[in-house]
Image 1 (tube, rainbow, N blue to C red):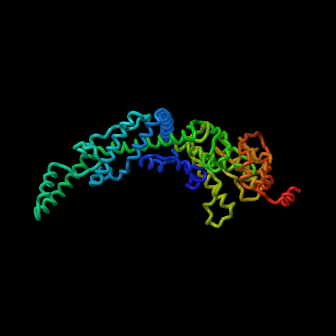
Image 2 (cartoon, rainbow, N blue to C red):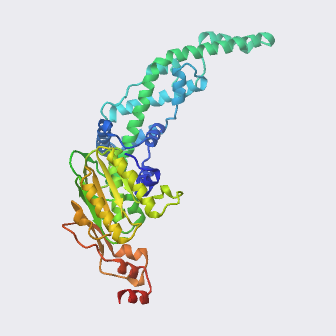
Image 3 (tube, rainbow, N blue to C red):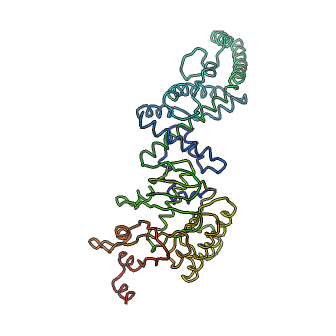
Length: 452
């Protein structure tokens, strides 16, 4: 399951990621690597969801302590390259300094994690042995320099020597520092696996913490995975909500079973927003994040496909309809090769004439019924809903209220009810085009000619 970066931006996933703010470089790297879990990684997905649940409860109980932990997480630097060089014996003085500073921060954090972390199986051991190798005098300071009895003697003599004797001692000091470098690498190397474990622990804890905080801030809930249908109750899209503030986003409740479902409604009625909102929340769930709904239950999907923009063949000289067909072909072939997919089709066959477009949309609906996948088709064509196993309709425009002569998209939004209504049988698609034209401020003469 994967969406392009452009699709992630369009549905609002990138907006969520901007607001997900880990405190440590290891958490930030984990955020960069965040992606949907595959079916084979089901246990990792369950762990990610459980981590949020446990962390959310812990933060509510010990908010001040977790604020302190956040500060401690911010003290870390990215030192994976230094650790790898130590492990393979090629480290230098700077690498040892980086590791010593890291170990001091880790040991301080480990004490806090042992006391406050709710996460099961999290690595929280103090790394005292490698720290003692880098800080034999137990200074507790992050500074580092090669040190041994022999080096101290050489440096003492060099400070008092002159001429050729000083040059000879400087060469001897350099040889002894290389020997100390090799000794440290050899001594520290067995401990690097534990250091890597601590980095993974930081990443896991940090991500769980920022996910839990965002869920608490936004009132998001944890999804439940199980066999059967897909159901989201009162889901929203926070990106759209932010864009239309102070108007309220109409929460969407939708339930899908295997086969085709259809959403009908006039243009500008909110069908595309419904599809993007569903795509966002399904994608969030499979990435191990809280979802923006009152309740969410869904099966583990192998594929998520959102077809609305067919720009991939823009340079191929194809018509808009040919581009759409090419994109549809790729989606259907990909979905056919997977176990269970959700295919979201936004106004399919919009690039051809209404008669043929309706025939194609009805055919897609029948195809989806036989596919073994979830198909959700948004359309304004008549006769498509009667082919679907489930049908929804955007409530549409309320009685017109042109407030103080206000026109344009703002007026449409103020008069549109974007709620999703479940319908039985084939209900005629709402006829809101002329009313939308009126709200857009089209001339009264043109409206009169249309209506006559």
